[in-house]
Image (tube, rainbow, N blue to C red; front, side, top):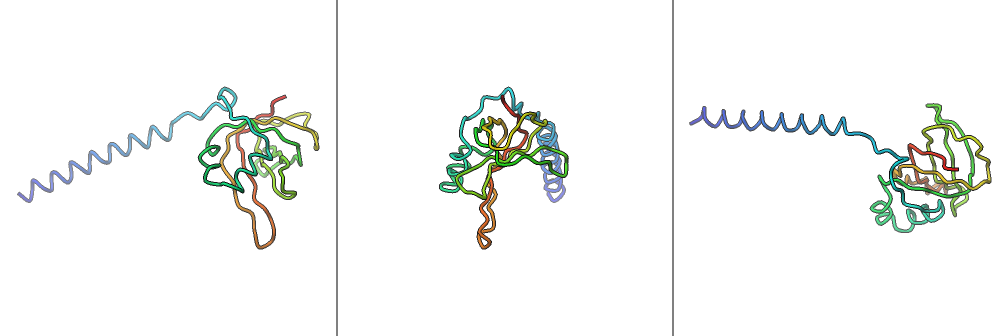
Amino acid sequence: MKKRSIKNILLFFGVFVVLASTTGYFLWNKPHTNILATEAIEISAITLYNTFITDSIKAKKTYVNKVLSVTGIVKSVSVNQQNQQIILLKTSEPDASVNCTMETNAIGIKIGGEVLIKGLCIGYINGETDMGLPGDVFLVRCYYST
């Protein structure tokens, strides 16, 4: 009887390893969402930011891991350490932004100009409340729409 239970345990463990490996393989190789071809939720930068700071649970359910088309006023344009263009859009808070990491460099962006940026929302990161710094909403894999 002892041999039989050991066989069952080993069989169960083997099936578990095969299933886990197969699931991991398919998740790892899952294709990325085509941002440009995906229908987006249209929203302004101010409304998006205000939703995250007033009702973060609702905002997470509605916007995180979704493709958004965000309109807003350009606050600044910079480049990060990976040489990706970063566009910050103004919000209702002077020091807060909607932070957009671009897939390709947007040409013709002017600070103070209104833009439409389409990207994947990854959420809101809190600022440092003790220092009076508000957080930002982050979009990645963004494209500039003219």
